[in-house]
Every structure is written in structure tokens, then in C-alpha cells.
Length: 385
Ligand code: SAH
Ligand code: SF4
Image 1 (spheres, protein in one colour):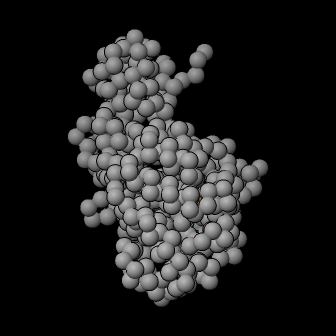
Image 2 (cartoon, helix red, strand yellow):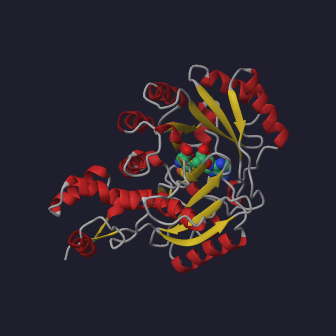
Image 3 (cartoon, protein in one colour):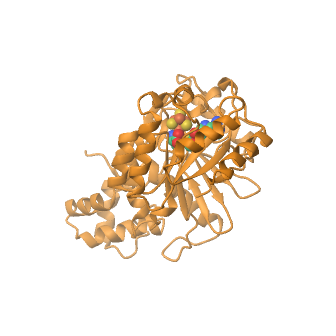
């Protein structure tokens, strides 16, 4: 018996090929894709304009399923966070951040992460595995249609879109899971799926230089780069990947990317670590570093967790740092944080759930954390694009 196909794993071209294998015309793939990604269909019965024979054929060979939800919490300000089961004791997070004129979904691309940045608890978990296309796009599918359901918007063609922006800033390094990430991006942009503009989809990377170039060729969406340091010695100590792709290479890659990017700037993220990277001297060095790259700076107050041994810079220090950048003419924002008191926020669960042998216990622990801290959301708090 051949394995059932999860249709969330297929990009537009693959869906056409799949329909071809079933003896169906390409326009059927388009219909199917719209049912899944625009109308939120999770079963074939509801696809009323597909022939009954096709629906029956599909139900014996395929299915539509996103990762199972372990927990689902909404904060008082409407921020909603899901913890999703991706099997073998691994869980990833997706966070929805509603704002006045937009709704942003932050999604994960890997369970754990191999880059192992000093300030990131996802990194401390180590790398577990890459997410599949279905697990990546499934976060958007699940979130979009659950949000509609919560608002009482009936499933089907007339649904009003809830998610207007997507940021790949959850768990994992998207450029180290390149193909599935790009396939998921293509679905986000496809007019017969989510139809998001490239400007509204942002990929954040710790700086995998060759893959930045590859992304510019294959699917140039808005780019955010996690900089966090103003010189190589400091960045080497925070982001081990910097030893492989040092700052001059990273800056050159950012410049090259801008020839293809949907926006005329790169966003540099800079996590504010007390006494580590947050002096006025660092700010001045940062100004020099980025001077040839059209960019915006986004300062992120560090979200502490015990094993990091790091502390968040005090607010006046962050403001003073921002002032040096702004005085030099750099557009700078400070990301607002919530859930300061916890280390169970986005990507912050690793310390408590590291033992991979005790899977059930680990899942239970994650669910407990979510229940306990359900109103608090940490790492991803306000996305400025
Ligand atoms: N791997 C990618 C995307 C996921 S991390 C990357 O590194 O860019 C998304 C953002 O969260 C990155 O800018 C990362 O540096 C930041 N981040 C990670 N841990 C953090 C923490 N403890 N506090 C604040 N920001 C953190
Ligand atoms: Fe991985 Fe990004 Fe965390 Fe670094 S900051 S360990 S690249 S998820």
C-alpha cells in the first residue's frame, strides 16, 4: 500500500503533477489548492465543486493535516500562541500578533536549531529536525482558519483574511531548511493560496551567506538579518556561524540581496545584552558596519533564560544606544516586550524540556508551561516591518 499524501506538502506545481497522476486536468489542482489554502477545507467532502468521483479518489489517497495543537492560548491583547506537536517529542511554536491594520503570524521552520546562538534557548535545545513543507505552511493554514473560526467567520470562499503578514522568526534557522522553506514561501505568495505580497513576508536569518544569495534567486521576500554584534570577535562569541560567514561577507550578501528584494532595505535585528554588546562604542561601531547597506535597525530587548548567563540591557541603555544610531541617521525601532518574567515565552522552553528520552513528560511540561504562562508572550512581541 502506498502512503497517503498530505496535500499541505505540495506546492502549486506539485499539486498539478499530483492531479495529473490521478488523471485530472491542471485546473482541478487550482480548485483543490483554493479549497485548501483559501477556504480552509480540511476534508474532501466539503469541496462541493469537485466531482464526487474525484473526492472519493482523493479520500483514499490523500489527506490534509497540519501539526496537532498541544496548546492554544490567547493573551488579553489578542496575541495568540500555539504549541504544535511535530512528533517524537518535538514541539514548535507559532504566534499571531494582531495590530490595528494587520495581523502577523510568526512561524517556525525547524524543531530546535543547530546554529546555537548564545542568547537563544531554541539553540540550546540543539537541532532536532527540519520541518516539512506541510508543517511549515500548516502553521499558516491552521492559524488562519482557526482565527476565522474564533471570529465566527464561516468556512468557505467568503472568508475574510486574518493573517496579512508572515515572519519566519520562530524556532529554527529557515535558510538551513532551504527547500521546504522556499516551497512554503511560494504557497504564501501564490494567488490561488494565500496571495500575500513579498513585502509582507519576512525571512529572518542568522546569516547563512550562500543561502541568502540562493533565496534572492528563488524567492526574494523581505529579509531580516540577526546581527547582534558590531564586530567579528563579538559576533563569533554570540553566533558561532559568524566564524564561517564573517561580517564583511554578510554585509556584502545583504547588499546583493537588495537588488532582488521587495523592499529597499534590510532589517537588522540586534538583541540588547547587558554589558556585552550595548555600549555607545558598540553603537558607533555598528553605524560604521552598516553604513553601506540601506537598512533599518530593530533593537530587541533580550528575553532572559537561566542557562544563558546573560542579562537584558536596562531600558535607558537601550534608548541611549538607539539614540546614537538615530543621530547617525539610521531608522531604529525598539521592539516592545511582554512576558518579561518568564522563560517560557516563544522559543524559551528548552531548559525545562531538554531530556529527549522522556518524551511524554516533556510534552506535558510544555503544555503546563503554556497553561501557566498563557497570557505571556516573550520573544516575538511586536514586529516592525
Ligand atoms: N534563526 C533565525 C530566525 C529565528 S530567531 C534568526 O536567528 O534570525 C528570531 C529572532 O529572535 C532572531 O533575531 C533572534 O536573534 C531572536 N532571539 C533569539 N533568542 C532571543 C532571546 N532570548 N531574546 C530576544 N531575542 C531572541
Ligand atoms: Fe537558531 Fe536563530 Fe536561535 Fe540562533 S537565534 S539558535 S539561528 S533560532
